[in-house]
Every structure is written in structure tokens, then in C-alpha cells.
Amino acid sequence: MHVARAIYTIWLREFKVFIRERSRIVGMIGQPLLYLLIVGTGISSGMSLNNAPGGMDYLKFMYPGIIGMSVLFTSIFSGASIIWDREFGFLKEVLVAPVPRWAVAVGKILGGATVSTIQSAILAALAPVAGIALSAGVVAKLLLLSFLTSMAVTSLGVAIAARMESMQGFQMIMNFLVMPLYFLSGGMFPVQSAPAWMQKLMLVDPLTYGVDALRQVAFSHTTVELAPGLAAPLVEIARSAGLIRWDLGVDVAVMAAVTLVLATAAAVSFSRAE
Amino acid sequence: MTEVIRVEGLVKRFGNLTAVDGVSFTVEQGEIFGFLGPNGAGKSTTIKILSTLLKPTSGTAILAGYDVVRQPNEVRQSIGMVFQDPALDNRLTAEEHLIFHAMLYNVPRSVLTERIDQVLKMVGLADRRKSLVRTFSGGMRRRLEIARGLLHYPKVLFLDEPTVGLDPQTRAAIWEHVRRLRDEIGVTVFMTTHYMDEAENCDRIAIIDHGKIQAIDTPAALKRRIGGDLIIVTGDPGLQQDLAARYGVEVRRVGNEFHFQVAAGAEFVPRVVADFPGRIRSIQVKQPSLDDVFLQLTGRAIRDEEASELDLMRQHARRVWGGRR
Image (cartoon, rainbow over all chains, first blue to last red; front, side, top):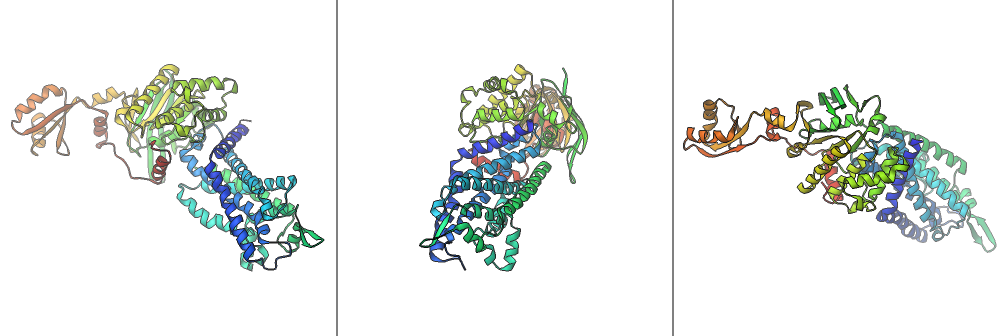
């Protein structure tokens, strides 16, 4: 009971600080938006996907990946913020409170996931820009998937940050871990058109499964007109072209398993610090 | 008087480095107890062990009747902590910090409003309850942290270098608050400092260096150990030997000054001037300070150590926090 309240306290703090930090919200939403509006629009008007099926353009293809990107960047940042918080923030005080360390890690992970999910909600509202139709069900599923993916990534951030002494190392993590995780997630280019060696890497990138799930959910309410009088569901087009690789259940199961492992690692790593 | 902290033979090693080397002491209920020593002397390590953040290599520490190793949760519930570095969020209000603290420390909801009123009044922040911490000055932040540390009615309040980086006026105000807390609610205050003048505010001081306690006593008693007043003479270089030979005292050279101690300094001055005609350029008498006590006990003045990784972050924090410390 007390532990639940402690987790809630850490979560609430994370949430309150986030909603008061306008510049961070703008930055965290602005970056994916730039990718979507400039990179996505630019590429889709200048080039086309190799062997792209009819009705699929790059902007549509990229949109779910942009949500994945927002989740990834926000979550890793949330996780890494414990480096700072531990020395100069509220968290320092929490560490001497009569609360188990793992509960602090769990509160932090849930807080980071909540923040990412709010940003996904804002990005979801932009789906029509990419030519994607939404329904209440689609949005709800997108947000649930964002929450799950974010829990995994925030856990990863916490697990690493618990062992890091300074913010200096954070830039290295961004360059050599977070960017590759994004590039290899199938968010920017499809898995099956990548060279074989890269496909192997893509298949072990957990975010690949998150993006696959986001893509099939995002596409699920959209139909495209291939020819006058000939309409087809976007999700079928994507699946038959191999742009969606697994069943939603498989994706969710993989993400859930990864989340469980990483969250445990985060709790253990954080409990052992000092 | 009852004993609230008992530490026996405390040792903490980090690899080859022995940060705390067989420290023993007790602290009575309602005392303001100070740990005085340079950076790296073992003060923070001791505080970390007492607050259950570090496990000792050997030795025992009992706090409010609980063993810091075997009963960490009970110990945590019994202590309030104010860290050397700020542990506040700029974007939360004073009240939110206190509410969060109460939730973590199981303060019953029924008494929460009253408690928050009480502790904010104690530190003179009652009118800033709903203000964001980013609008607070350095001294106000420190006071809020002290209020927070008291919210769950701890037996012991730890203050780790509580006035570093604050201006003299604010430092004096913080001290006034701390003394009032002790008088009004009888909380025991355990503090560390490397400011000598601040240590004077403590009821008792432990002087610590290289992980060992060099002396524990009241500030007045420690100064009495020096054995009288300090005479500081400048003049020709031969004075060091001649003064020592004439009066049978130990003369230390500090820069171009010669220091030695005598029982009654003021009466001694005319004698020195008469004994060494024409050789004395200046002479002064100083009441011994804790600085002198420290110098005598450890053979050196309190020093600053080189910047660590944490210090670099601290400097960055200082910029972010707008000149707090």
C-alpha cells in the first residue's frame, strides 16, 4: 500500500514537472514534426519507395515511425534525467525516504511512459496530414502501444543512467544507441528492402516490433482508392507488400517481454547504485 | 539527556581508500552536533552511512534505537535530510514539495495541512506556500528544504554543508532558524561544515581529518586546548629561533609571520617588545579560533580539493539554479 503510494508520488512529480515545462514539450514534439513535415513530405514528393505498392506513399509509411521516434527520444530522455535528478533534484531526497529503490524506478518508468503517451496523442492528431484516417479505437490503441513501447525504452534509460556518473555520457548514448535504435526500427525504411546484414540487426532492435505494431494500428482505419471505384484497406496493402511483418499479437508479446526484462534490469540496476 | 546516535568503530573503505577510519561518537537528544573537517575528510561518507545511503565496511551505527544496516527503513523514517546540493524542483511549488514528501513518509492526510502550515511558519515561508521554487532565493530554498526535512517529525535532522554558497546574512538567518528548531521542537541536529566560524554555533564539534576523529568537545573547550592566546610577530628572520629559545615555546612560521602561544597574550606583548628592541616590526594578539584548533590538531589549514566529476556537474547546476551556490 505504501509502496503503491510511493510509486504514485514519483509518477505525479514527473507528470507535474512535465506539464509545466513548456519548452521541453515544444522541443519534443517539434522534432518529430520536422521529420514528418520536411523529411517525410520532401522524400515522398521527390522519390518513391522501391517496389512501393499502389496507394502507399512515403509519408504514410513514415508516419507510424515518427510516433515511434517521439516515444524513443522522449523516453530515453526521461530515463536519463535521473542522472541529474539524483544529484540535484527531488530524486535525491527520495533516495533517503523510507521507500524501496525499485518503487522509485517503477514510478519513474511509469512517469516517463505517461509523458511519451501524451506526446503521441498530440502526434496522433496530425495523422490526417499524412493521409491517415483515425477513429477513437485507433487512437486508443496507438496510445496503449506508445505507453508499452515507452515503458521499455524508459526502463532502458533508467538501467543505463543508474550506472552513469555524469551527463557527459548521455550524448554518447544518444549517438551510439538511440539513433541506431531509431534508424534500424523500420520507421524510416522497410526491413525487407535493407541488405541482409542490416535486416539481422533490425530484427533484434525491439523498436522494430513497436513500429510494426504502430504501423498496423495506424493503418487499420484507412482505405485508399487505387483506381476509380477500386478501394483497398491500407493495412492489407502494407501487409502484402511486407511493410507489416507480424501479427499485432506477436508485436505486443515481444514488446511486453522486452519491457519486462528491461524494467527488471532498471529496478535492479537502480537498487544497486551505491 | 538520552542518546540518539551511537557510532562505534565505523569504517568505510572504497577499494584502497579508507574514507572513514574507525570513527566512534555519540550524540545526545536535542544537541546541535557538528562534523568539522576539510573536503574529503570523511564527513559526507559518515552522513551517507548514518542516512543508510552507504553500507559501512565494519562498525555499527545506531540511530534513534535502530541499526542503520539492519533496519534501514526505520532509520529513514527517523531522520530528515538536507543535502549539500539542492534537491528541489524549480517547477514545483513549495507546497507540492511538502505534499510529495508527506506521501513518501506516510504522514497522515488528516494532519497534513496543519503540519505544512507549521513547518512553513517555522522557516518563515508561510506566505510563499503556493509559489514555484524557481522564484525562490538561495536562502529560501535552503529553508524550504529544512522545512521539508522536518515535516515527518524526525528525531534527527541532517544538514550537510547547509550554508555553502549563501551570503553571510542568509547564513546567519539559517542558523537562527536551526537554533530555534532545536529550542522549540527539540530535534537533534547533525551537521557537517568546513566553515570554522559556523562550527561555533554547534553545541559540540567533532573535528575529523583523514577519516579519523581528532577531537570532540564544545567549541569553547576545544579552543582552551590551544593553551592560551596566539601571538603573531613579524620582524627579522632570526626571530623564529630567538623567540623559541627565549620563552621556551614552539614558534611556527606562517608566511612571513611567526606564530606562538602564550597563556595571557595581552600582558605578554610589552615583554616581547622590550626583550627584542628594534627587531619587531609588528605584533598582534589573537584569541584562538577553531581554525587554530584545526591547524594544531592536523598540522594544516582546511584545504580545498581538486574538482571531481560531481563538482563539474555542481558548477553547471549553479548556473542553472541561478547563483545559489
